[in-house]
Image (tube, rainbow, N blue to C red):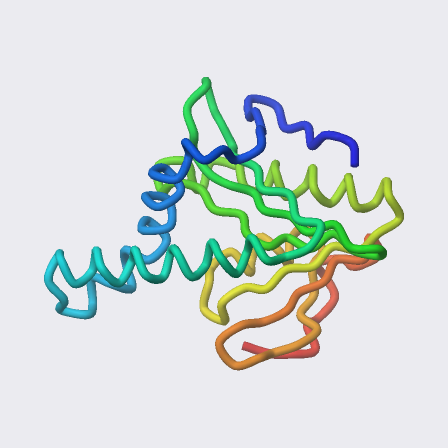
Length: 171
């Protein structure tokens, strides 16, 4: 597959030495949720380690997957995990550190992924938590909800979708 080009962002394969950063990134994605638990710091840390390791094992089991680290000015700021299927490009995960969110980086990376899919004649798809605010971004980029699995929604971009189309599954 051709490289994903996003101005100001470098992408490189994840290395074993990135494990600590990836664990911290994962923890940042669960911070708001875990604040409400009332757990001690030790309980949160144990839970996060268990969940991070389980997620990593599940992601690593995906065939034809590409695990990329996003860097800005040489510093890691996020991750992009993709699965290359015959007719689609599946976004397994796109996560950014909180300080790099809402700056157009995620939308730029995702737009580059969609361009890659379009150039290959593929669709793109992803799963998103029902209450994740990123759904608004996905809709703006032309994704539509095709399945609702309760906690998660599956969204698909086929190059012909437009944000003006209504989702068949309502919030």
